[in-house]
Amino acid sequence: MSQLTDMFSECWSKLEATGSKDSPLRNMTVCNYAADDINAYTVVLREANAERNTLIFYTDHRSPKVEQLQLNGKVTVVFYSDEEKMQLILKGNATIHHQDEVSYWYWRKDGYKGRRSYLAEPAPSTLINEPADGLIYIKGKKFEEHDPTGYENFAVVVIKTNYLEYLQLNREGNRRAKFMLEDGGEFQGAWLIP
Ligand SMILES: Cc1cc2nc3c(=O)[nH]c(=O)nc-3n(C[C@H](O)[C@H](O)[C@H](O)COP(=O)(O)O)c2cc1C
Image (cartoon, rainbow, N blue to C red; front, side, top):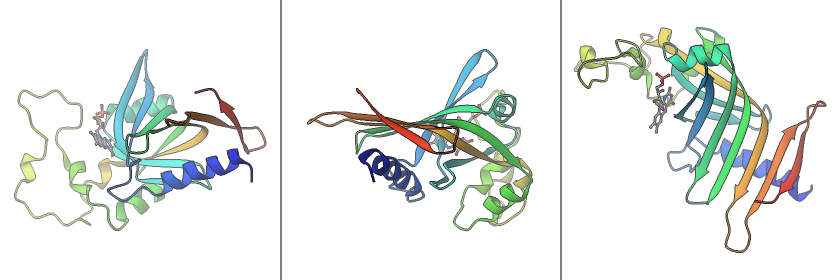
């Protein structure tokens, strides 16, 4: 295998290692089109799949970003690990899964502890008069993690990537490479001056 091929696999291995709280690539910044604006926000990387070249995050279906992504699925995603002094930039197309087999599978997935946040009322991004999280109405009430309430607001965003750019800062010499999806379905790599 060439150095570039190794590098590509190594990047995806790092992404796939997410899930552990200590993973340096646990959070990512996603940027998408929002009419004539650019939206950017942090989300938790829930899953990366090197074979499919996909990244997954969860969100509330009522969030404005969902409609933005449905209108234009083009996204740029940025990861930065301060520990490793490494930046990964990926580009691709996002698909929203809502009340389908995919969203149901992730909703039921063991180990997921964030289901309660999908019960927020009113919806995310609604203007309010006082600081609040929208969950006061269920405060103190019993909540089972597998309670189906909230599922109707739960959406899974699958990003199919077609570009990956790697940058490693290093005292001995910075290194940068990009990998682009070719028509034949293979990623073609090239080194770049950092
Ligand atoms: C560390 C961190 C992790 C976050 N993870 C998520 C996430 O996984 N999904 C999500 O929708 N929002 C997440 N957010 C909140 C988003 O950055 C954003 O503020 C929110 O989704 C509002 O989006 P909206 O403008 O579409 O309503 C996270 C924020 C932080 C600071």
